[in-house]
Image (tube, rainbow, N blue to C red; front, side, top):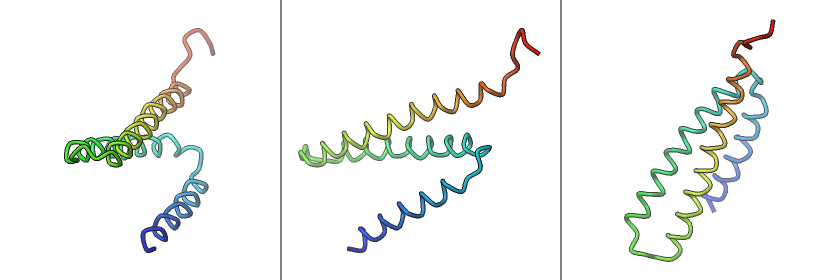
Length: 93
């Protein structure tokens, strides 16, 4: 019950924090999120190695790696696109 309470509290806290971040800080926040997702991938791979081929661990580990990978790749694309908006245009004013 305590873990469920902590999980729900983290959801609400995360939503409130992200909602109050100004738009200028979203790129650095996305980079930090990418780093955390990378750590999640490493953790899921370590769990894979330590499991004794248990089906539940394998399924949950696969889901964790897939979700974290999507977050990392998508985050880098968004960060790259946002940073390209600050580059000088070649033929323009």
